Image (cartoon, rainbow, N blue to C red; front, side, top):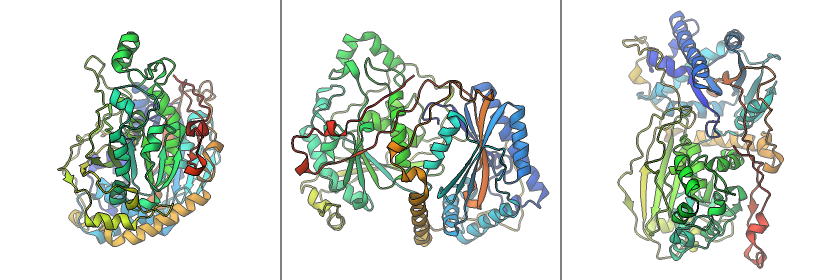
Length: 600
């Protein structure tokens, strides 16, 4: 939602609870028979709810996610009553997990990423403690059956979806997004095309061929992928329909799909010009773009906002996939990077995505890890930094990120071909019977690995609960020592997790209607004239994260707003033709589909 420009924010009751009463509370704290613990949890829940109402009233919020365990009908009735008093519409999102293997996988992932177990030490005690916490909730949990409420119920990570009373544009968008989310850990890879002739000449847009150095990168890419991407032979390569991305993927023996939606931002009248020529021929436009690069639209072209809208179906498909390598363009990859790293619209157009670099993103619950593999082939620098004259004020609707700067680790320089690299490459076979080693050239340039780290939250960043004071000296029952609760050794349980996730993925691919349908068959909802206008006031959603506990219902909130931007219709990818079938056929004409956009 935030990526699409809809002001959204998460109000996580767990964060309020951690600030008020400390993070390292044992399972007794959550026992409904513990009156002190219940009073503390209630205090944290009310603090988060009050902050949410204040955000709607004073910061023009549109979608709020009230992330709490609204496990009983009485609790949900109380929440609904408070929202009605504040003229707020509610959607509950309930996650029910009955698959024991999937529960265990969720529990281990929670322990690995949750601040509650950040300083723990013993794996078995940690797992026992978390399971005991889940048992406390399971004892009084009441699943959603209320016919008069609006809710989405996800069963076993989306293998089944039950929907009740969904109305209006924003509610439809929430349903569309939730049905396409994956819980399985995965890596996402992307790279810009090799250096093009237009890059060398400093020209915008176009459909030029690769330069000599770009072709060298294309020949090097198969070995880079075979050496550093696990299960490289399983990768599906997505490209745009432009020559330079198709040529960069040429030597990869993997299955390839060309997406019209992945084509570079359309430069319109500026296509084929240098920045200096644009400034000379269109001085007012040039200045306007420097002032607001995200919203500025080239004459007869596109803006970054337009690109975000047409990429939404691609991102939803990407959320359902694994083993994907995207070979794309600078503006396109900036938008995809900003989605996973939760970067603001102001920062998005200035993200640095260098040429001849493979980027690996590993999305997690609270953060997204990044690693870059820089191939030592020179290329022009096409990054244009934000001019000092442009506005640098942060958007009032964008939450501030709690992140550390992306700092390169000490580079690791690899020789052209190590013996172990040869073994890995020889073992990796593509779909077409050719090894990735065979696809690479013998004089491969060295590769420089840079590990980047960030604490940027993937979702709208959790508020720091500044409205509540930090309480110190909170006592913890002596029956469970905080230091004895630890992270489980993932290596020991890797096989169990893999089996659970494989089972969950198989269920999802068979049962989730959003997975079973082709993108062309998934309609994009059309907004009402005034969203939520039938009821008036704010539309707010309820959501509770309870997949680990066997079931939970959450609440989110939405505010009615007039939307002038509609996501573009999905544009399905086109499978590559065999070389023997492509003679005389224009690949772009072959994959061309009508693009209709309604933009702000």
